[in-house]
Amino acid sequence: NAYIEEILRTPDSLPIEFKILDILPGKWTPEVVISRHQGLLQNVTEELLIGRSVAKLGVKKTKDLHWFHPHDPEIELDESIDKELLFDDILYLYKAFRKPIDFQINDVGLDYRNDRYLSASKNPLEEVIVEDKFSVGSNNWVTSGELMADGHTYMACDPHRAVTVPSLRYMAHLVAPGWDVIGGGEPTIPGISIGHNEYGAWGLTIFRTDAEDLYVYDLNPTNR
Image (tube, rainbow, N blue to C red; front, side, top):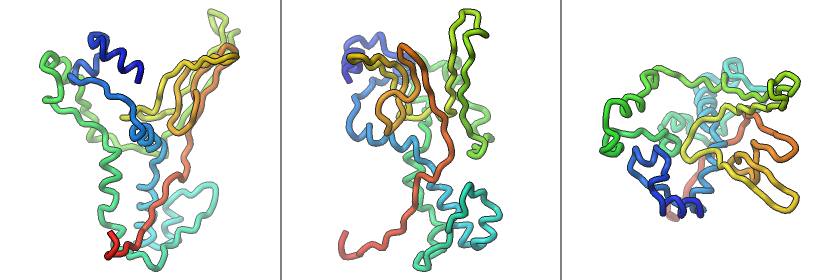
C-alpha cells in the first residue's frame, strides 16, 4: 500500500495497462488478501462432474472412465442427495468469481482507442482452445556454471500457473538481520516461494490435488 500511495502521487509512472484502461490501482484490503487463496483451489468442478457421472452411470463405470491416482476413493453418493439437483447450475456464482475479465472497447481510454491496441487485445483462438487440465504440469531445471559463458549457475522455475486477477504472485524484497531474500510469493504461503538469497535459489512446481469439496446443506426454512 505504501508503493500504491507513492505511485498515485506520480501518475505518470503508472504501468501502461493502467493508462490504457484509464484506471488507478486500489489499495490492498483484508478481503483482497483472503480472495487470493482462490488462486490455488480449482477442482470443485471435477467433484461435481464425478457426482453427475455416478448419478448417471454408477460407481464402477465412473471409475473406469476417470483417472483416480494413486488411491481408490469412495465416490458413492449419499442416499439423501437428490441426484437430479446435481444437474442444476449450482456452480454459477463459483464460476462467475473465477471468470476472466473481458475488457470491452469502452473500457479503453480514448487516447488508446485505435486498431493497434484493440487488435492486440483480441485472441482469435479464444473460442476454440479447450483447456486440458491433465496436460498441465510444471518444471524446474538447473544449469551448471561450467556450461554457461559467464560461469554462473542458473535455475529456471516454471510452475505453469495461469495469469489471473488478483495476481498469484507478489514480488517482494525482504531484508532483516542475517536475512536478504527476493522473489515472488504464493497465495496462502508466507515468505518467498520462488526466489533467491545471497547463497542459492529455489522454486516450486504444481501438481493436481483434491483441494475442494462440494457440500449439500439441508437448510431450515424458518431460520434464514
